[in-house]
Length: 388
Length: 250
Figure 1 (cartoon, rainbow over the protein chains, first blue to last red):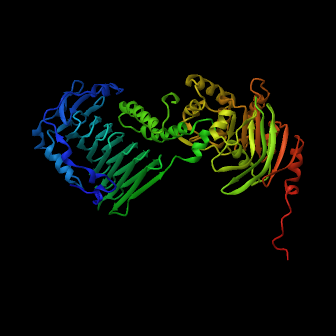
Figure 2 (figure 1 turned 60 degrees about the vertical axis):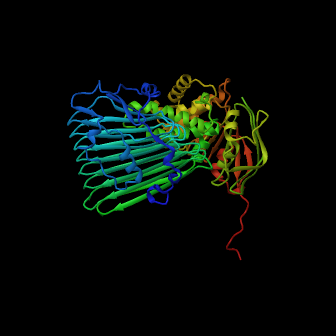
Figure 3 (figure 1 turned 90 degrees about the vertical axis):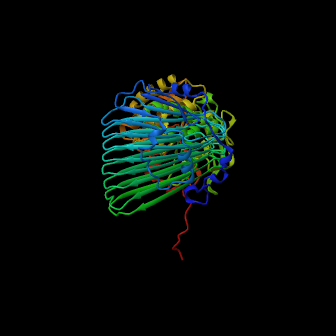
């Protein structure tokens, strides 16, 4: 088992994970919350893939154009070369071993999909170990939006892998919204490659689970490639949010830009570990990394760990991080208008997140994320809904 | 329509007393100007009355219509009727002006407040397009000052503490704001009272004060009618200062 003494799991509660407490689900039951969740999207999806406890239970491709294939056969594992992680863990091995099937979405060259491809993963069995595996490939010049949503939960353990292959000149807009409930462990490993003149915009939202980990590794493999990563989390109670990112520049003239914004309330904690890697030969690369944390409770804490692994000199690299409470001057300014302290704090924290939410690459999930975030924030700050 | 009474106010910032016993009273519809040199404690006076955290009142009282505000936090003083127009209104990213005003007005209806906000912006000459932005984000110094007055207009607070509201404003903007504030003071349904803190005469040319108070080294050292402005402008504040020891004297 992994251990918190390894750098890969630093500041995580991984030592508390007992695999025997979970069981794999052979036959999934019926989804309970998926339909209501889909109702909160503000656009008709191009395609809905519904998973329950890690198994695909339905695939609706009604609105997909020809040239897009969705396959859920275990046999698809064979021809597909999984993207490799620079830092695989024992849990990745367990995931690959237990994954019941692989969802492969292939988007043909130059196709531009109207509406989001939505993958809903619902956790129904209260002690399930689930291992979803999704691979999305965009052909040359293709454009698509993909939203991955997680609901349900309990004392569950999810080890999920998402692979994104963005072909030359393609443009992928991707969001992952994690809304798991209760004491869930939710560990997501995202691996992406970005081709020549291609763009990946990927945004992760962590609102649920007791332990929420998103490990994202993006390798830009050819010149002109751009990676734009965003993540956002709000911790309450004893939640742990763990965001680990790698912006890997493997070719010259590549661009990456990361912004991670989080707030921790109550006794929650967060850790951001961000690496910028610029390999030999990746000259004229431009990499930016920013992590901003609001600490809203005296028992809450946030760690921010930047790592630079730069092997070329003709590059531009910038990183910044902040950890601290809500700005006192801003709060006083609002209070001088007659706004009560908790309401002022909610306005300021919402404002902190709103700047990031405006950049959500899949617009049809904005309302869902915003309303869930606001409701959670109001609870965390003990603000009555009436004062919204 | 409220009477602000400040009695023997002592206040300190980071353990150092800045105000050494300030007393004055402002009746509804009155304009009182507080003038003084840099470092006299003018901004501290505004923040002590408003209740800024870190500005600690160690002695004395502040009452509004007989209600003791001295130990209340800033938001409660604002709800009781005080408004502070900041010298340097700061940017608040992600918080729209309308959202702040809706939060400030208990039971307020967002659509009606938005209407008032647009009307006030038009009256005060603030480009309505700026109302959609986050509070003060990307606004010039002059636009921020106009925004402060727009906020006062929407909140209709009975007492406005205006800290250097004239700085950063060009002549036209200053006269527009002066005219607007004078109307609010004269408006029998509002009877705005103003505590105007200023360095310069130019604000008082467009906003005629009932009383001038001279603040030097944390004490009110003189008081008079509007005629005092010309005297201060001609003579400065040197005559009010305690003679300092000459550090080079033998």
